Length: 225
Image (cartoon, rainbow, N blue to C red):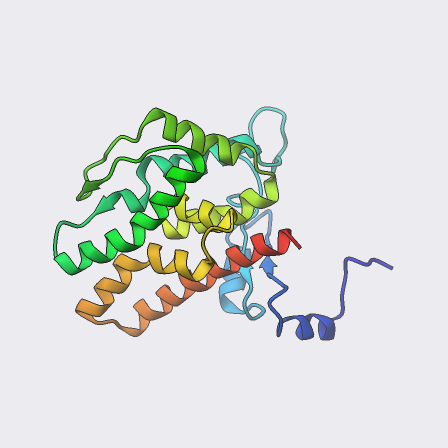
């Protein structure tokens, strides 16, 4: 009997705990969009969708097959690039209240990263790109290059949803609880909602990102037993 298979009743019981992260990987080779369409129509509560082409395989080429295993080094390199334009390095000049919230929240993240990785960061006001010190980029890249594929997989949504490699690494290293990191990376969006109000669609989108962020953090936590 396959011990990797469980009964529906067993899964239903597990859904009431924090020890399970569900991934729906449904896919049709002849119709690559069918799996996600089926997921949108109906899926298990709390499940996340992973696309075979985009999430679970590297681009095919040469003789490596239709769905080759992802290259961990290439995957880590893509995540490391977020360190070159980390959310926490781009501040608002005004309104002053927003700038103060960013300073209070984001300076704590950058301060931890400075101490932990022995690096420095360049910050700016506005969205004009600011170049980070070479040593900073190299050390953050090295931190990712030493991670195994499962931790990279868990780290990825934290980085891409939040836009901050620093916040994601802070969760991974246990320096910040997920709630604190989420408050930091969602600060700008929450400010906009406070100022301009919200609608049902925006609230659903925000909640989905929050849920996926916390699910990724929980996945990393489960890796440590």
